[in-house]
Image (cartoon, rainbow, N blue to C red):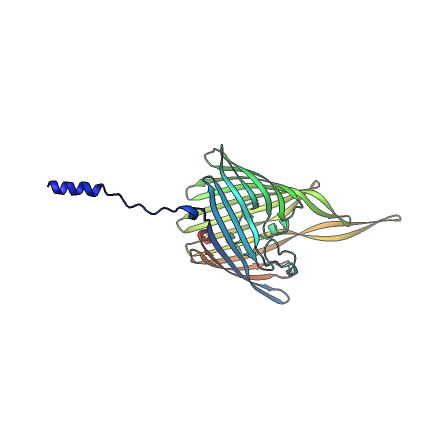
Length: 363
């Protein structure tokens, strides 16, 4: 009996084998991910135009620099007709890498404040902050393209954010930026108020966004700079029960410039998702600019004024997506624009991801 007790004591004193700890330079390695976005676009107008391309290849480098400080860098290679450097024409094609986003997040400054510094997709509305692989559609809503004159509204600068100590989510943001891509000429300002409230298996969200800065206006035969203010509201509803999800979004925009208020348009979408598939619709209402010369005669005087007239156009899109794996997705989209020269556009998209950032491909 004494021998058995002695053996038990010896075994209990043996050092436990610990899991090997990561040390040295391995701690400094960021999470590296790759996202591929392959798109085929068929435009059915007076003639059929087909464009197949690797639309975007995105590399994500993400890491914590300190417990409450995080760095995110997204480098992408765009196709010749997509992305913020390819909106003019294929003659300006740039096949080198572009820094889509590169910013530092200060997650806990104190008293509910946080901040971001660097290059960012501006947090205007629900759609603009998203990367292309996060879109629920293959193309951006037309009202955002026409208003901000780019696929995404991007700036270099910083923002401060405050999370209010309320029983529901209430977040206030403000930022100062220099133009990297989009409507404004140089420095512009942004703000956003966002609130969200959960009711059982549903969540209702509401936001108000602002962006203001100098932009160009064509008037009296010349281009002049004015201060433009863009306001957007976004309303969203999400129902989630297991893998079943219903998601509704409505986002209208207005622009204020030189004491003139202009309705820029809106987009709205409704999606139904299961574990492996998603089906939805998007409605577009957007304002396009047409410039017409109006001649007026007063005695011997002749004045030529260029007036900017807007026309509201419609668009309806149906979307179907299928999740092959957790990081591989295919999507089909048919868009119909009854007032456009190209009335029907058919898209096919293949998305794939590798690494931690690939989780954004899930429904």
